[in-house]
Length: 310
Image (cartoon, rainbow, N blue to C red; front, side, top):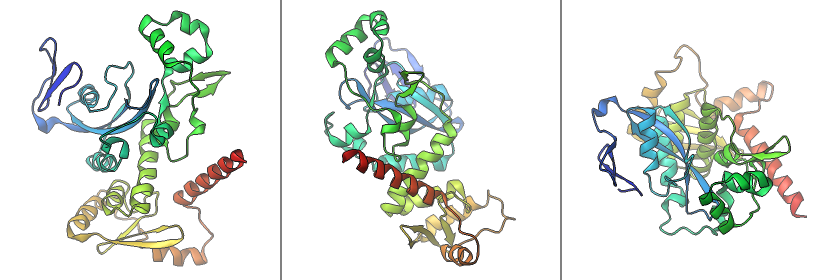
């Protein structure tokens, strides 16, 4: 696969123009897994779509370079890498599985005016600045000023305008601070990853009933996980929309789960099934799960959206 100015051969990245090696291949046993959030194009002029990719590399700088060579990434854009962090192998596999079911990445033809893209895309920072500060526009270099002139002044959404399920958009879209819209801010990478996997597991695992997604989440977060997923004797169970859902894992996935559970505190007595949770809840004080809290936020967001439409 070749990029605009780089060529990838195996685990080596070569500058297409000079022939120089950007990332040298080597001992693959030294490689680690990384999650990289990057800006992707095909989102309309002056916008990008944030996507989280998993990359195997020997260090964080190599991981960024490999992520930049992924198709649809705005590799020539300043600040195309939004965050990069080391993750576990199971987290990397879950990110890959999420992307395997992302229509933005799977579509052969992308249109910046497509409804899904419009819903997910984020305005570029220079458009935000140009919309509100003539001094910034005056100081802007010729190329960016030309982009602003070509794209025009655009309306844009702030972080709060995105649905709760759009975790990356809410992390990187502009916010209003001190009377000015700003894009750059500190992001807690670990919290962002946790919330992203939480939401995607509800979307693809619970709603889409994809066993691989639920299984990987269970392997990552263990028996006492935020989504209340339980495992016992080859059966995964969880509560969704007030109903108990059960999944047969098969021997292979069961082995993965049971092996993963060994790294958690085996001395702690975990509740193993949804039925046990329900029986305890009948005699104990009601508890609000992370999923219940998330659903409550979604309901609140929908109510506000419905109110605004009236």
